[in-house]
Image (cartoon, rainbow, N blue to C red; front, side, top):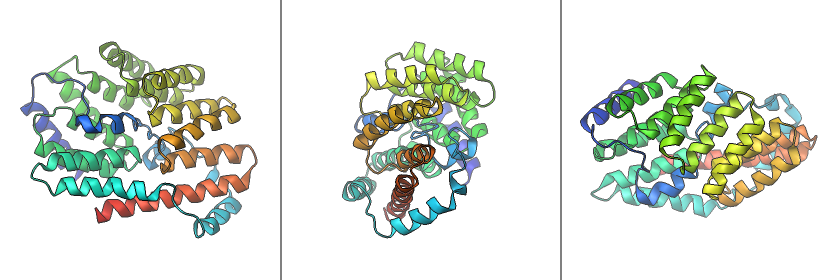
Length: 313
C-alpha cells in the first residue's frame, strides 16, 4: 500500500469527521496497550529502526564491535524468546478479531501490538485499515501519523497533524504529533506544541513521555528524566516512560540507574526489542561485552518472531 494512499486516506477520514476531534485511544480495550507503547513514539517504543535512522537513539557504534555481534549470533541459536507464547497469543487474538464482521477492532489490536513493538511502518498500515472500517474514530489517522513519523516520514505525519488542527485547533493528539515531528527541526517550536498538548490533556501519560523524547533529542537529559518520571507516575505500565528514563540516564552517564529502569521495562513487556537494544548499549558502555552480546541476541530473536507473527496473522 503506497504512502500516498495512506496519507490521502487520512485526509478523507479527517475531513469526513470534522466534529469533536479529541484525544482518545483507538478502542477502550487498546488504551492501555497503546499508552504503554508511546512513544514511543520516537519509542517507544521509541528505539525502533526508524528511531535509529533518525538519530533519536544512537547505537554508539555498537554495530562496529564485531566480537559482540559474533557472540550474539552464536547465542541466538541457543536462546528462547521471553514470554514467547504470550506474544503469539496477542497476535492470534488480533487475527480472530479480523475474522469478525467488525474488522476495525482487529486492525486496531494488530496496530497496537506492532506499534508497541516498534514495527511502525506495519502499524501505520494497520491503523489506516482500522480507520477505513471506523470513520467515526477520529484519532486513528493521528495514530497513523505518529506511526509514519516514527518510521521516518515526517512530511506525511506533519501533514496529517496540520489537517487535524485545521478541523480543531484544540486537538491535543494533533498538537503532540506536530511536536514530535518538529523535534529535529525546531526545538523551541516543538516544545511549544508539546506544552499546548499537555495543557489540553495534562493527565495523559504518553504526552509526558513524548516530551521526554523531545528533550532527549535536544540533549536536555535532566529535564527529560523529570518528564519520563511524570509519565510513570500517571501510568506505571507505560513502557516508553521506562525507556526514556533509562536513555536520559544513560546519556547523562548514570548507567547503573538506567539499568534499573530497563529491568522494570522488561516486567511490563518482556519481548520488546527496543529494551534489549538499549540495555546492550549500556552493557557495552560498561565494558561487559558478554552481557551486551546476550541482549543483542535477544533483541534479534524478538524482532524476528514479531515479524513472523505479523506475517502469519
